[in-house]
Structure formats: C-alpha cells, structure tokens
Length: 117
Length: 109
Image 1 (cartoon, rainbow over the protein chains, first blue to last red):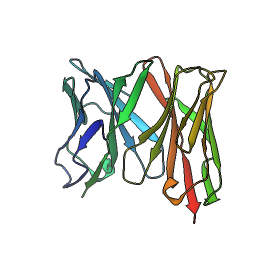
Image 2: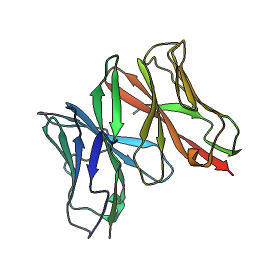
Image 3: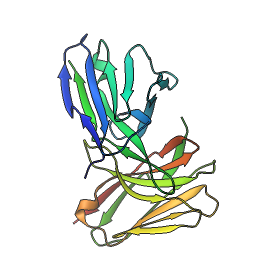
C-alpha cells in the first residue's frame, strides 16, 4: 500500500487564488521531504527540499515566496502555491525519505494535478 | 540539479518480449532505485539497490547496481500490456537523489 499520501489529487482554481497541497508519510517519520514539478512527458524537476523544523531549501529558479513550504511535523509537509497563475498549472509530486536497514529510499505521493484557470 | 543519462528514451515492443534499459552517471552513487510511473500518478518504487554488483529481482523485473557505481540497468522479462508506463532510474549521492530522464515503454498486444 501507499507509504506517502498526497492530497488533493486534482485541484482547479481561479487565477490569483492560493492552493495548498499536503504530503504525509504514513507509518514512518520523515525529516526530509521533497517537492517536485513534472511537465508532460518529462522527468521530475526538484523544486525544494523540505526539512522538518527548519526552512526549506529551494532549487535555483524556484520562487520561495510563490511556493511556500511548511514541514511542521515529522509526517507532514505542505506546499502552498500562492497567487496561482495559469503558468503554474502542472503536476506536483511530493516524496519522503524512509530510512531502510541498508539505506534510504525515496517514496512518492500519487501527485497533485493543478489547473489554474 | 543533475540528471542521469537514461536510455533508451522510448521503446515499442511486442507483448512477450524482454526489455532492457539503463542509466549512467558521471558521479558515484550509494544507492540506485528504479521507479515506474503511470499517467497521472506518482512514481512507484520497483527495485532498490545498495551495493556495487548487487543483482535484485522483483517478479519479472531484474536490476543491477553497476560495479563502477556509476550505472545501473533494469530488465523486464516476458513483457505484458500492464508494463506500459514510464520508467525512471534514480541515484542517491549523499542526501541528494538524482533522476534519469525516463524511458517510455509501450507494449503492443
């Protein structure tokens, strides 16, 4: 079953509104979560690394004031797209790092499709 | 961020055929992971590899961690229609994960 839950799976909003996406690790604690953006038929593009209890680390070119990340607990990170515009329409995917016996594994949420009208 | 070289970019095969894809990197990795992504879904982990030379199977899937730690391959044997999707490799160096560009697989019944 899923080990990372992402909600909502699909959201449609008007231009100028803000949208919050939640990412939860199920039955494990994740001090580190990642947020990705994916365009059609392309690979995952890392937007930011979310660290529990501290500020997120954003990749170059990603506006931190537009994509607000909050990692308030060991099982929850949120991404808020502020003042969304049509060009923000995309597929957003979160992931969480689970420490396994011999190494770390990254598990992904099911993704959120954002459509900004 | 860094992206891994994944090939082939796309494959069209007949049902029952075997499939092979690989990833290469200029950097050494501690972990190699293979994921499958269906349309509109997040990637799902298929196989995780932790040691150079490691060969691991998951059903009809087999993956290997290259000896140089800079490459990995994934084989799918006796493909079936539900194998259709995009396959991504990922390598972990330190606390960073890097992804391949993906291999789109189409299986023709």
